[in-house]
Image (cartoon, rainbow, N blue to C red; front, side, top):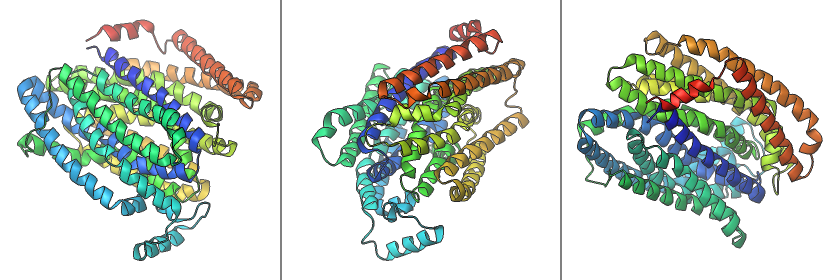
Amino acid sequence: MALGRSMLTVGGFTGISRILGFVRDILIAAVIGAGPVADAFFVAFKLPNLFRRIFAEGAFNAAFVPIFSRKLEQDGEDEAQTFARQVFATLAVVLVVLSILAMAFMPWVTLVLAPGFLLEEGASASYAELGDLIVRHLSDPTGVSEKFDLAVSLGVITFPYLFFMSLVALLSGVLNALRRFAAAAAAPVVLNLCFIVALAGVMPFFEDKGLVMSWTVVVAGVAQLALLVVACHRAKFLVLPSRPSFSKDMRTLLKRMGPGVLSAGAMQINVQIGTLIASLQASAVSYLYYADRVYQLPLGLIGVAFGIVLLPELSRRLAASDETGANTTLNRGIEMAMALTLPATAALIAMPWAIVVVLFEHGQFSREASDATAAALMAYSAGLPAFVLMKLLQPAFFARHDTVTPFRMALLSIVLNIVLSFILFQKLGHIGIALATTVSSWVNVLALYIVLRNRGHYRVDARLIWRLPKIIAASLVMASALWAGKRWLLPFLNGPLLEKALALAVLVAGGLVIYGLLATLIGAVQLRDLKGLLRRS
């Protein structure tokens, strides 16, 4: 399958999922807003979702796909299938044990994830005062705040989602290595559909909104796993569980997954650190969540989609000793990704408030929440190109069976993020957390690029050098036009919902037209190249 067509397949389904995700988050914002119930649910969902992203888009995928691809190329489907079944069985046993332990110790897990929830709603404390409160809680766990208790209860319900989604990650890796990208890319659509049905059809009949949303997470996990099992069956590649086995390939997989947890999941770990610190500020967890959901749309459409497709493509080219083809593939992937990411970044920085107001300011979501979320979105958006580039550069290491080097770079990023988050949170509140994530991600990308270049594993070619400045120029012109248009349409953005939506639609459509025409005119993007890429195998 052509690289470009594969990216369109993954990106298309990811786009559908993210659009449905917006519908989901609009409903969540309208139903529970940015208060204590929202904070508790987002933290309860954060831990299994963190593991989902690290496994599905990170450590497991990075370690499993190159080994599985090599077996397909060199040993045939039977050996590859045997390996996949061994991994399935071993992973299932580990996940059952992990889930039981996490659910049993959820109060301590919640204390690590959101220590600020020990504070009463609206209260604040210094780091020293919070430390004293944690010590008192460990000696006497009674009398904690309602939000902390709620987060613990919801966390017990949502954690089994990790079990289902890790197995989904395994089956997705199998299908991606077989170059069958559609089902794995469509799996997140199921999650969002389950939420939409629950919020619109089930929620009105229950008072405990957090409980409904938490059980929806579990139901969605079961449904996603069922979808992938059916897809593997249709591909005539049944991954049925066998006896757990620690074969040589299994030990290699586990060895590579260790450093891969940090290297591929650095951004997610940084976000989790931000959540921990944000729990010290009332509603900050919610502000960061809603801002994260907005910039995750282009990140999912571009970064995640390109990264998923690049890893098996690079693995196969390198297995065939085609270094030149691997370098060209990575250059074209970066070129295509930046042609889409940079205008999206410019748009998010130019009009974050307009986007947040239209998407979320309904029901329980106030103007104050819109302002706070928009500020966080602008800070996150400055790091969007780095988030995407990370997804593209890391596969160049993983395809060479190197998870240690990205691990070291990720460790640097995480340490920097922790330091910056603590410092900037004192000055800027939740906005400082978003900025810390952005800065540390850019440092990670720079380190990855320098190592790849110094090792001779990546060379920026003349075409990318020629086109990247043109992409940047077209994006800046578009951003200027959007900023001016936002000021002109401000009365409509402060009006009724229909006027807001129409005003945002005009801005988005206008930005697309301006960027598209200018990028084509100055040669930043050429249609014949895109058509040729889609035909190239």
